[in-house]
View 1 (cartoon, rainbow, N blue to C red):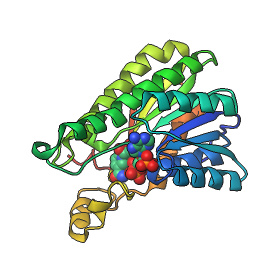
View 2 (tube, rainbow, N blue to C red; view 1 turned 90 degrees about the vertical axis):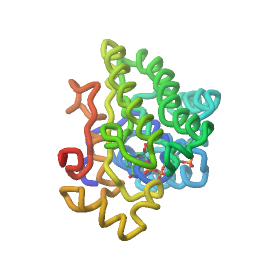
View 3 (tube, protein in one colour; view 1 turned 120 degrees about the horizontal axis):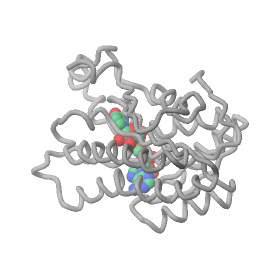
View 4 (cartoon, helix red, strand yellow; view 1 turned 45 degrees about the vertical axis):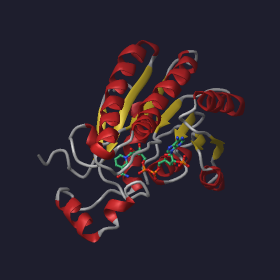
Length: 254
Ligand SMILES: NC(=O)c1ccc[n+]([C@@H]2O[C@H](COP(=O)([O-])OP(=O)(O)OC[C@H]3O[C@@H](n4cnc5c(N)ncnc54)[C@H](OP(=O)(O)O)[C@@H]3O)[C@@H](O)[C@H]2O)c1
């Protein structure tokens, strides 16, 4: 990643910052000068990413957090305030899905998906916005997906949750624009991470998926970072309520 806007002195929380797209975003923010708190359930992974940022000369800490718990969300916010004295950037990246037809999806599976993908960004976004209001503004980036725009099999509740997150992004943007809190979304197409591994490790499935992408390849986590950094930068001072899709042309290919 060679694009690094000046985010020196900014404090950022990245949920799901221990691997995949969240790890790449945390590293990108760290390399741009932001102080980063990585948050997820697997402490070893978020600690490793924080250490990677520190080893590049940046400043980062990790906070083990289960985003399905409102108490742990509050603890994450307090941890960040105690560590760095404020919050300027929130990247709601963590997400949950089950690869299963809707007819077989259990009620508790549906609840886990909506709790992680919609309720947590709401609770964390609301808590962080109250702090940003006292600091003259901030940036919230919600990570959605091309699946927020198109239906498809096997991930129905996940796609529905991301469509809800897209709308939450727009409503947060409208309500919080007067406080200079800009809220946008970044929607990746199929990206090579653990999350999507069952799809891209099957050669025939990968061939079929790639055939539908105009740029003829799946995304890498690093492909997603530039759009997030741009939305955190001064260059995006008049952009709110939008989704930038980073999908190699997938959604344009109707
Ligand atoms: N990969 C793709 O093809 C693709 C495509 C479109 C959109 N996206 C979106 O991109 C984002 C990142 O996905 P990814 O592919 O990088 O996935 P990933 O590698 O599976 O990472 C997901 C992250 O979310 C965290 N997480 C899940 N449940 C959590 C919970 N209850 N509390 C705290 N953290 C939790 C996981 O950490 P722990 O398990 O340690 O908690 C992990 O760090 C997601 O929003 C996803 O919807 C991905």
